[in-house]
Length: 409
Image 1 (tube, helix red, strand yellow):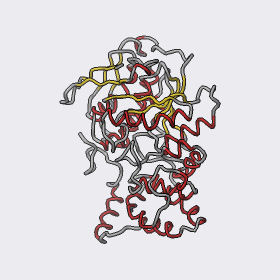
Image 2 (cartoon, rainbow, N blue to C red):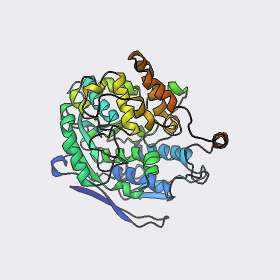
Image 3 (cartoon, helix red, strand yellow):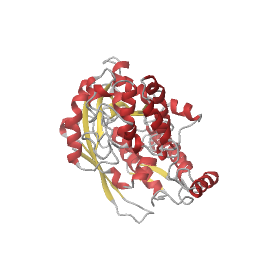
Image 4 (cartoon, rainbow, N blue to C red):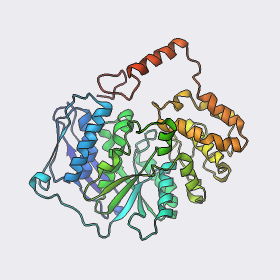
């Protein structure tokens, strides 16, 4: 079953297109043509391409419109010219200007989450299962997997089908039905940088809103933690496409979006999986091979294995090809992985592992972590140039029009 809408660009010289969400009939209950979902899918690409307005030919929840005003202002502050006009949202019958927005009754609705079988989504599902009894409204009953949600994987339906085959058992073990969703909304702007830094939280929320007659609450797993802020002595997380300051504002009167598990560090999340056999065996973090076996050699695989090793869990899972790591395995870890401009989480995660590795007598791995945190093979001139860029503020997340690495036009 497919729900679709036509997109026509007014100010940008882009070709109009049809965007859609699609599920099999088996999962069509509560799936409907929700204008809120299509607004969420289109609003950030429209702002990115400098449209002056976005018009939805249907009623939009006024609460969602207000939330998006905040999101748009925040995204402009983070990434765009501060003088750029914020896009104006217009909606048809049912809007605030034309009477009360239509709301769906909550009776019979359930909670859901996004799922990829990475550590974040697995820990969210398991933590939810342990925290809430099955009759609690926030107990996750549906886990949604989206075609193309993994930036390094492909956009094929065959990949999505394989993910469903591989992951249905693990979600079922947690009491949730895995629901695959086919959509082309990433085609509104295909650049990976835009997807990660700006839009992927909105994409996840848009899919959930397509099921707003089925769901009353949808959880998005946090990839950051308060512990990382404490490590860096910072007061706010850096800009990112899914963010605790942003995701909750994708809510409407029909569906609450929650950015969840922000208090859990990486080791906390792995501990949550420690006694969950199905989850521990189905960890999938290798982007280029997803949803297939982890390669065990890329930085993300090494980082995850290191955390499992620190907790004495690596030899208890078959999710990786080996049950131990050597210092040489950490050669894939580069100094950029420790730079908060690259990823605020990564350096804090590695340093969180160190006390546990020291207690386990793995000083070789501790030395390898600290060695990776030092600049290598860089000329003094390059270090001076980097320092000057930092002083000038040119190393921050790209702001269109001021940075040599702008988001795509």
